[in-house]
Length: 524
Image (spheres, one colour):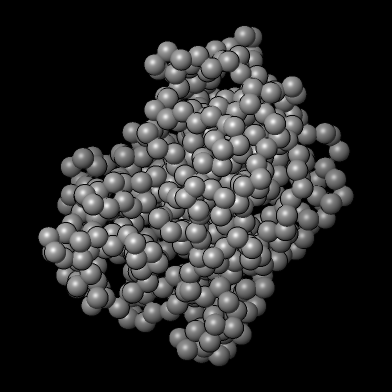
């Protein structure tokens, strides 16, 4: 097997972007003794794990679902830190249930990571026969995850041939084939369980990969395994606390984080980067650079444009604001995360994943409602003597390539439409009580440099998956390494943390890897 291509002799490294990928890469590099400077254009760390500061409150305006927190522990451990040593301490708690799911027929189901509790819940809602089928599905999800994690997710590739470049790799690839990993996710799940409600719960995660369940590769059952078996976690102070903790650990260990430092260009000598310049005129010499922004921003910094286009995932509209707790007290959905499914399913995905201008808004939307104060009461606020809680509502929608809507005109009426839908579904008082302070749309994401206005990055089509995804080391630029959702292994909090570690490995960092998927000793 050929040795993996790496960058030799890189002691001074500039990381562009202080999102989770950049901070993960920086910690692994700093733990290996490298001189690391992180440049972040915003005034706060976090990237996609960002923050909306409303009047009297803060709320995450990026990822809200945390799985596999042991990957955060790994990044902190690279510099000898842990959850308790950062300032302020990072407090992470398992959520029980992970999700509350509501369906158009009026039924609901709680999703538990514990198999016994989930069996009891499935028995209650779907009957004992379906509970037995659920256990069969759960075993298959775990087998898919175990077969692919170390070899295909937490791994660098120089070529698709690396999939069979060793006896171990060939064995794991054959195992995935036998498990049906290269079939279609929707079809495989449908064979395991028959209740349409369970089918939705174990396939909606395909949206994270940017593909409809009917078209997604079954290897993305690994995401459902993370979501429904390994556990979903809440973070005191919100997901933004994770980025702040990683940045604190890096600075404490001697790394540098510069905020408000937007990169203007890269200085090349031949094909190698020798310095990074910011818009305010600062020059940062380096032996290598790690680029974590979205691919349009990355490609604008590199001398030669990439010819192969990237197909983007669907996008999302997200409403952020507050609502009186006297209103939410009457809601049946009293959970941190509620997935409110419409009656349409296949049609919904067809609408938001259509190509070349044929995309449509969901006629019968499935929505994610996030109420973080239910896990962290410290987020409650009082306004004019009335207690309020922060609230976010996420509606998947087409990206700007799929549907080039004028979101400046559409944002307000579509927000009102979503509130009307929720009012009809039992969220009484939301139309009048939800004070919407911010609406993120595909235009928001596009203005931040995200491909086609999608916060989910490149869709995980077969030709954009694993070794076929944008490589994190481009042979045209021998000391430029990529990290983040645009490169391997892909989109999501666990995967971008992994991408940071993989980028560090491209720069010669090696370290033992712990077993993933179990309880973390640092959890509260």
